[in-house]
Length: 64
Ligand SMILES: [Zn+2]
Image 1 (cartoon, rainbow, N blue to C red):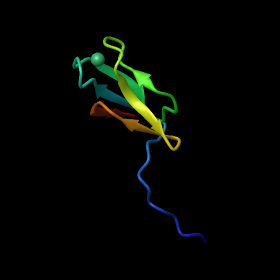
Image 2: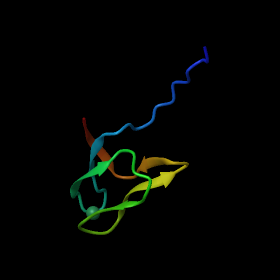
Image 3: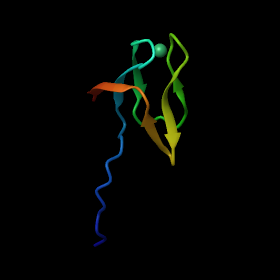
Image 4: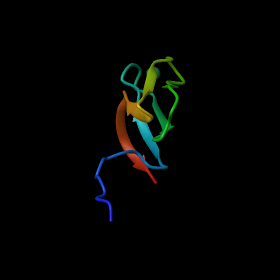
């Protein structure tokens, strides 16, 4: 039985992210593989890194 690594990674859930630029709160997919931009100011909220979403904004809540 292979040893399972415990790497924290986003699963199929949504995150409520607050834009650091304009404080707009937006729901983004936690497993986003594309850049997600703020609906209001166009600043990136997530940035794909190695297949995982790097959250740039402030994560307020995880929505299951
Ligand atoms: Zn914004």
